[in-house]
Amino acid sequence: MLSCSVVAQKRTTFQPEKEWPDTEGKHINAHGGGILKKGKVYYWYGENRPDAGGSMNTGISVYTSRDLMNWENRGIALSVSSDTLSPIQAGCIMERPKVVYNRKTGKYVMLFHLELKGQGYAAAQVGFAVADQPEGPFRFLRGLRPNAGLWPVDFSKNDIEEACALDPFRYSNWWTPEWREAVKKGLFLARDLKGGQMSRDMTVYVDEDGTAYHLFSSEENLTLHLAELTEDYLDYTGKYIRIAPGGQNEAPALFKRDGKYWLITSGCTGWAPNEARMYVADSLWGEWKQLPNPFVGENAKKTFNGQSTFILPYKNQGFIFMGDIWNPKSLSSSRYLWLPIQFQKDGTPVIPYREEWTLKDLMK
Ligand code: DGJ
Image 1 (cartoon, rainbow, N blue to C red):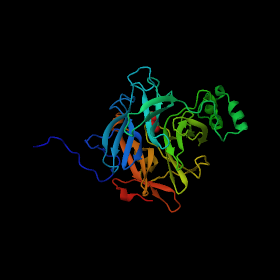
Image 2 (image 1 turned 30 degrees about the vertical axis):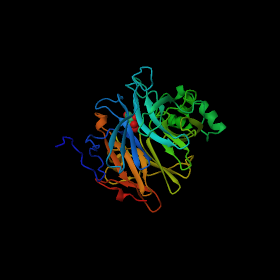
Image 3 (image 1 turned 45 degrees about the vertical axis):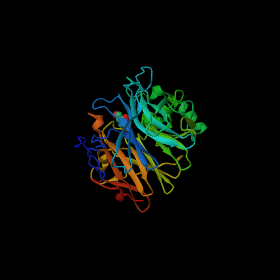
Image 4 (image 1 turned 45 degrees about the horizontal axis):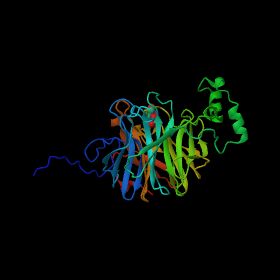
């Protein structure tokens, strides 16, 4: 009997910028995403975006693959709610989901950037959701602003006094040299101390000892915060630091290689591409030192039109940079920028562009 089903051609290479059809031939809709590996299966979670507009009417997608090139659509891992009282009601914004497995509880934990329906990007919350299976369904727990009432662990008594003395009315004009100084000293940190710190673009990183960290753009997207999560990954321990105060970093992606932590971020220009930044540290708690943009070659100053979202260690063989090439007119059709990371002799990451590549191009 003749079958009518169309079998998508198996992919054997990565092709940045191009359409990336799933196993049913539809462009993958998992933007601002991240990857979890469980057994031999990779799970790709990302924003399931509508063809037009910026708010969500579905939720967070999940796709599975064994080779990272051919992905099967497994549906919506975390659905928006039809309950109009829910923080994740249809019409909210969910961005940059990251899922981690908790060895102690046996649960899959999702953190994502949550914006409440009808409020643009003002809520600046993190959402927590949990599931028994990697493909979901994830159950939404709550949305919040982290670390209410707490100062960063490296803030001295003097730093706290200085931050508390900053009068927001004196600095109502943004971008002046005085305002920049005040931001570094904690103008917005102090402003948001009571209600919790703003949390927008984000990632989650699990270190070798199983401790998980939430890294997010805070303080009006001006300063990154790195906050330790509790053992079950469902809350904060209260221990956190600021990274690059006033540096305006978004889209954080973090990895560890040979004992060093590398952080790749973007600047803040909405959906438009900009020049990536890179930081390195011997400990997650700092000190974080800025290095030049790791992207090299033509259009490197615009990150090849992309923006970081995640860095995936592949077996013991190397690291894959994952980014998004946003199409704000139709976010669902935004493309992907996955590239192998290369390393200089001293261990510094470098990312040249490639039109097409395979896992053999990865470098330890
Ligand atoms: C830049 C962020 O990186 C994206 O995730 C998204 O929030 C856009 N800004 C919205 O303009």
